[in-house]
Amino acid sequence: MEKADIGSMTKGELEAYVTAELSEPKYRGAQIYEWLCRGARPSEMTNIPKALRDKLQERALFTLPAVEEKLTSAIDGTVKYLFRLYDGAVIESVLMKYKHGNTICISSQVGCRMGCKFCASTIGGKERDLLPSELLGQVIAAERDSGEKISNIVMMGIGEPLDNYDNVIKFLKLVNSDDGLNIGYRHISLSTCGVVPKIRELAEEKFPITLSISLHSATDEGRSEIMPVNRKWGLRELLSACVDYYRICGRRISFEYTLISGKNDSVGDAAALGKLLKGAFLGTGAPIHVNLIRVNEVSETGFKKGSPESVKAFSEELSRYGVIATVRRRLGADVNAACGQLRRSRKEKSEEKA
Ligand code: SAH
Image (tube, rainbow, N blue to C red; front, side, top):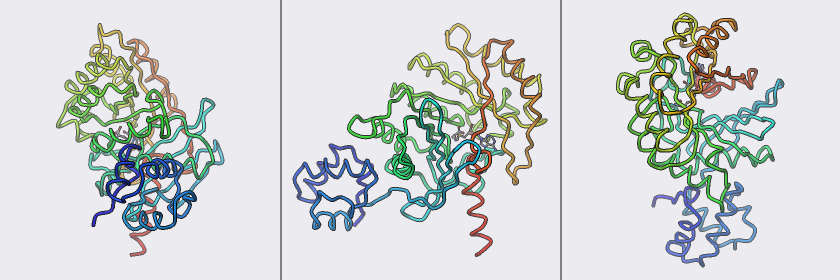
């Protein structure tokens, strides 16, 4: 019998499950739901009778990620978690402490199949999608481990959230639910490499979340070279979906642009980006925002970062087109906090042993 993934259920669904499947009174569902929001295992559910706890252990899946390794930055207190999932797979989450509250960066898949050339997360391909309970579980497990309340979520870890669309939508509803963690949609960002049909579907949900687009190049030729997804949906389709997203949701979209030395970081590249974005959003009234980040050097990719001066020149050129750019502060520089790098080094270690 397949075990029920109770952590992916809403309170109502869990109440229905305990009555229909476990022949228990409805209020037990509400009690279990509360425990799960706090990351409890059955043995910790002290107001639940032992017989029911045993039944749960036997019939339900407990997917709360377990802390496999934890690195705390001596520079800024950023905590990088390597989480072990119920089936042994590992993912990463990063807890960042800002003045305005704690932010967690969560993974959406085990690995990734998007194949971006500069990214460590995609090197071994995709193993599987994360369940809604595992998306939520990263937030719950980090809160439980750190003793801190998390108020913001960015979906910028391992994986492509829009390639795990249904589970991500369920997760957003669960984490926003006022009987759950109750994290406001405005405190959630989702980043995508540009899965255009799903951007359009997401717009129809009208969640007031922040959408980020990983752009990284202003030409189809340059983008297709480093991001295979662009061969399927080119810049014109992508930006038209972004404009429609803005029209439907009224939410500003931000663009991520990773600067790679000699590839996409010249002043000419900045001008092309400025022109592209200004042109795409002309007449929409949308403010355009670009986050610049110097590429994190991943040994397998061979891409190098440019000088801080080249970033400054890039950003100044963009401003000539009315495009506001911020240079991403690099948190957790000493704990391998960039996407997929800790999981990657862990996999390499275990492959060496084998
Ligand atoms: N798949 C989604 C979510 C991942 S977000 C997306 O592509 O948006 C992770 C962000 O970090 C993306 O903008 C990604 O392009 C960027 N990134 C990946 N590898 C990087 C590297 N080595 N250096 C800098 N940025 C990187």
